[in-house]
Length: 345
Image (tube, rainbow, N blue to C red):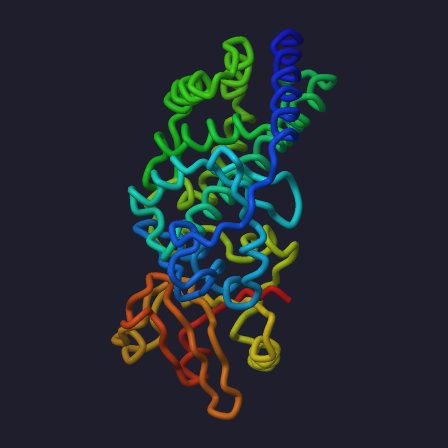
């Protein structure tokens, strides 16, 4: 085990020095990246995946703090992207992976910026999972673990290889076949130029039950951003997306009337991102017949009118209802049809 990890350390050092020598690219206002509207909640459109939790939250952040998302993405001289989160290493996103996601219907937003954030968020979840798996591993010697974690914290190649390998083997329910993942990971590591000895050691980790189980759990929880076509209501948690970009997120229940009103009033004051999730079943036939209603679905809050007692929301599908998925509900209908809300402060 020592020899492969020695090689990994050398690979990491070389990658780090190469990156340090690159000049940071300037902000180019190109429509391919930013679309025709730029960072706007109306630009965000969920694709074929059940990723409402991610898209609705990104739209909420685009409304409340667009500068956070704009500053999170920077181009690199080689045409790829670096995405910055509130904590942890920046994640590398390659144009080919963005194109893959767009071509396969992962995202239909105006501009590629949401797809870039989606891929980076998936890799961030992977990185945290792999570090956790190494720390819990009985296979990896204690003296090797700091080196392995250090390499993970500084490596783009491994995360991209894992991301691509998972996307090719993940099932519709978010589960994975361990053997297929091993084969595809070996192929991706080879394609990324990782020396065979290091690649063999990294693929070998997947043979340990605990290591694979930790990774599989992460993919199961965040399956949609890896391409799992899971049903609505089985997806990730908007609070985690907020935490990734802002460092904190909170949740509340519409069953608590006064706390919900207090939060809506704070939201109305501005600077607060807020999303809300519908109940798993319509509370009455009237709501069930409404064009906006989707069970266990996440919506972006766009406005609250205290005087009129109305809440304006947006379906991240960008439709239902048309145009744009934007609709306004009486406060009483909102409280009756939604069961929870997540907010940034």
